[in-house]
Length: 252
Image (tube, rainbow, N blue to C red; front, side, top):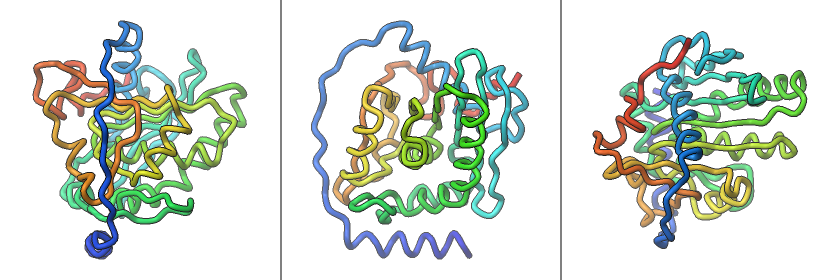
């Protein structure tokens, strides 16, 4: 019932969408070190699909995030070598998630002019307080640590919303965000805000013919945030990144 109500509200909001025009940007190769960095944080995103992940990417599990009502899952991990607090959000893994993915309408957030996918926003709202509190506790206990946010598919959209939220709550903490196969999640104002808040620390990775990043069209007001990194692997698009199946756990 909750999902049905959210879906109906999202559909109603379509009438207020404003078309967005996205321009093609310049292309260039990336270094091996950046490639390895993108692959490393994909492993966290992939591990979020696991029901349990005792040592995400070999590091400390701080908290498993799980809202059973909205079926929203992820985890918060800590890398004491790199001095990072990692927030990883799970992608689509159920019928409920798939229905949320097509919640097309844009819902206004509590920042003037900023809107995001109604369906994705409903999921993020269900875990926001838990994540903000846990990240805040970790930053207080571990001075000088940075925040890293990651997610694949729907998890990438949730990571985008996490990027906005955590920037608001922890403006002085160094932050980076990595998304993989993220669908368009924001209106132009919100997408540009994410870009301005993260600059060259925002990494949005897409894969060849992956249709998920474009499933929410610009014609109804959606826009991607920067910066896009395009993979040319000959793999099934969306399911596999860096030759890694997106549900592969790296938990030991």
